[in-house]
Length: 437
Image (cartoon, rainbow, N blue to C red; front, top):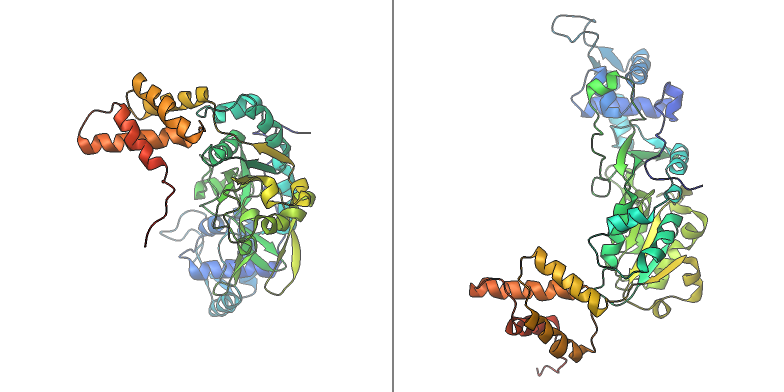
């Protein structure tokens, strides 16, 4: 059953070392590498850096001490030391082991989350658990002038968490609508800083994609208390990945860093729990059919298949609302099998003359351009008939920006005139003519 936004269950704070889900050797080596790479020698500082509760971090330090890899730098309560804080450092054997571990993988810092544990968290915060109401969707798109039936078509598509294809002539707000869908989500989910699979580290948190929720900070004083959730995760807004003509099939694969010997999660994995927008479909180097074929298994089975450098393949959760946006008619770029896999198809047409005038007035008010009735009549009676009265949402912004540019250059007040309309119009289209070379 779908639930309202804002009810995501947090990943529980680990209470004992077994709850981390990683091998003792991997955890110990990350501790050693972090001590080697960071200027850290206090348990609370180290716990914050590796995103573990202090008691578990202390247990790992004690484990390394028993193996003569870490040593205490003094005695508890010595002069100049913070109460209950004992500084530690690597022994010579610890430094040697840290260098050996760094040669295998440069990764240090936050402990990764095992992939199997992350799957459970994905289910707790699934995009398909969200129920978007008409009020939420309308509120997120209140700044847009939309056809009356568009919200009715979009609402069920968004609430289902299934794939959406938006198509129609260019310049009519498909990208803005996609962003409005993202804003309507409104809640937060938990993103792991890194994942672990088969001993390999996959970096997951990306500050370009993931926006940290307000008020979610991690400091030493917080770690002294019982944390509200597993700090190997970051509380973020539901992510949104937007790609356009630059999208290639290789961007949907794991990216291996041969220097660090770690992996970077692909775009669709980073967007888990959120939205993946493929804008301008049909402008990519690969044909649209080929791109959609790559998504068939994820869209149908809610799982994706990735591969390590070794060739080993493994499954990752695919819990993403995929929105395809194109200026082409779907029948021009897809076969029927591909279209069948895309659950919702929504046409985004240009505005009616009435809505065009509403948009024009809103833009003019925002940009402080004084409206003029004679100029609008001139636009509608003499200009738009030359293009069969085909209106587009981008046109008011384009025309008003053009008029403002002329006014600024000429040093005159912002007030539209038929002459300014003509000058703006001349830049909106290119005359179809042959250039003599």
